[in-house]
Length: 375
Image (spheres, helix red, strand yellow):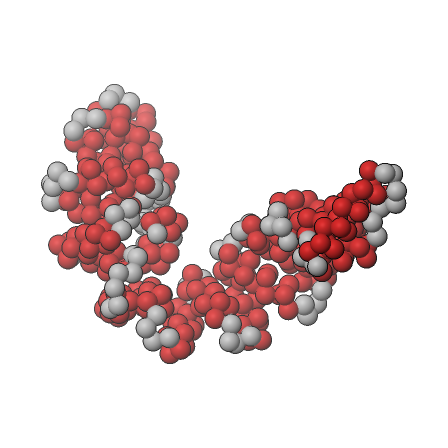
């Protein structure tokens, strides 16, 4: 079998070199059937030299490229097919799949919306669209699609988990918790489901239930972000000693958890512990999107007279959350000290406009971008 595959590929190449006719589509498909995707690619390219406007050949070329995990090249081939025939539903489905395989979920969703419209009732298009919307964090649009495909395939744990998480991130907490409890009934020892239940409980202020779920997740050993989640709840409730103990436990097993470093540093700052600055610097170096680390470094450097550094940290804190007044106020004080009255007035004017700080819940801490970086 292998020898025949080599012979077919060599024959195609030899024919081209000799100026003979290109291989046939049936020869290309024979190569595909034998798993020789590189040989099939050569055959489709040869056919395209004589028929460059045949959208089907571009689609076939894309398939052979995708089967070699060359998804960017496959995307180019599928797009050429669609330039020639915009109504080619299968090419749109293949294009969406190629984007999906690359993890480019926004482009996958765009292609798959068109594929689902062109191929009504196509289960693969519907499922890939649902998962692409979820992957793109477009949870509001993902929910109805995930509900539809999960109902058609109720044993698919991947779809059910994506639906449950989409409910959670879309703040449909009752539906999220119902799905998580169903998942937990199937797998009572799943740490991941306990973590998700904790987020759902915390979002509706059932903090004791959230802590219990996080403890349940830890019952079989260390689970990333579980100690941090408990510590964050304690920190939010001003139970700083208990919070610090949880953050330290997180860091024992995950020393690169930037969130745990940042919140531990914040507690140490409140306690005037000299370990605060090293922990905050480490957190900021690992992930410069954690606002509390930037704010606290600004506070520390202001107190130490390092006003240029303090200004930089406070500006970063403002960029991360322009709606929080504290960094504006502290920056205004620096501008007053350094003889910049106009800049100080602008910051103080911002303070007067900002009445409410954004509420942060455990969902954003455990499942947000900075938490993902900590894993």
